[in-house]
Length: 121
Image 1: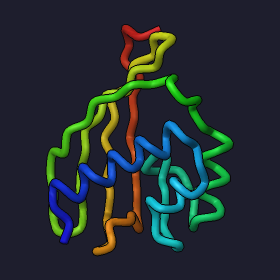
Image 2: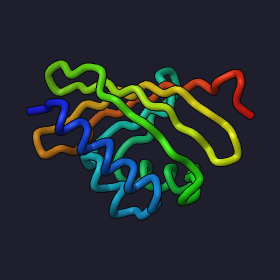
Image 3: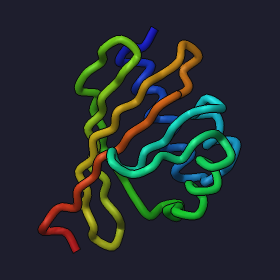
């Protein structure tokens, strides 16, 4: 069952993978056939191989960001999270994540929306 705690745990594991860029950490977040949308209207990365390769190709470096997050809603297997991501060189982003979890805690569908704050570098 998806609840606030399972979404918070998934976000914490995502953060671990974000900092490590380790393929095993990334794979552990997603089902083998997962879809990862980097924007709602962009084609998704599909499956472990593509998700891992695209993640690493687009990776932030460890220590380059900090973030805050808050689960704003859970409906069935869908969790919605609001985040603020702060890059060390001054860029600041507001994000919304839609995460659909399987009972084992892995995401089968992930969509992110992000907007750069006007006042950031």
